[in-house]
Image 1 (tube, rainbow, N blue to C red):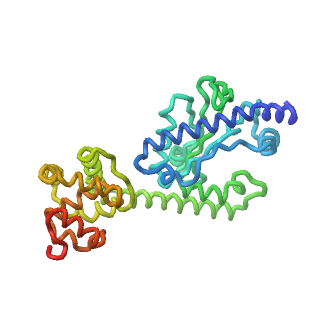
Image 2: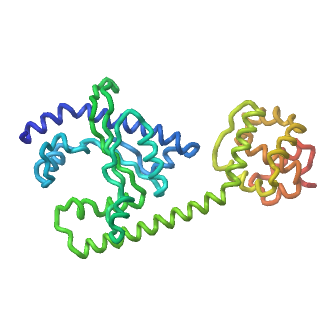
Image 3: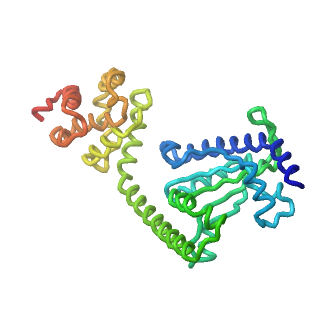
Length: 328
């Protein structure tokens, strides 16, 4: 195949590759979003996901001039369309891999795994990324474009630190336009060693954070359930929810759930008050408002101490329960 023939075929098939990449992006983002919920997908992924097809000249150079040893370059080049998923932690890479393997629309083949490379060469510190090639399992149409079976799409999964290293070094050291010197290679290896250590520290810090937040998360989940059950509407989300739960969860005991449900059986008149105020104040659209009422009922003096809510808002809650903020 000549360069002209190669390029002619590529331009004819480009719409199919573009559609396939877009389809893979949509399906994977949906699967990841379901996995990481209630965390927003935009918070989990550190750069936007967009399918990218190779530019004509880049594809020709890879096919004909970079000594790749291809017998059939058009068929053997598997990254004519590709996607990149960048996450914060190494554990998050596993979540993306689980999403990739959970979808039946493609056959997933792992083309590169930095964890296995570390095991095989434990004394080397080199470029790190997980690469998959996803091939369409069956022919189908997507957005009015015919996608045939076995169409490849490369998916790279990296941490933010790995991505930063790749952006800095990859074109020079791994796809050289100039010969990388030994000093440059040594500096890059030291950088990767530091990145790998930092990644381990990040994971350890995150584990500590999650342990510290476990009680608050459990309490917030219970509050969401009770809010939906008792008020018949779904609660809102937001940073104020965490702020209120973190502050007031310190006042409750291990028997909180049973105490909480018993308390509500005696205070269910609050349902109409909360539903009415939902339209006026965001605080009442949060399930944490139930915890605030519970604590004001049971610990009136402690509930106003360093409270996250302003006195005016707290005064209404105390008044609803037949108490005075000033005298409590």
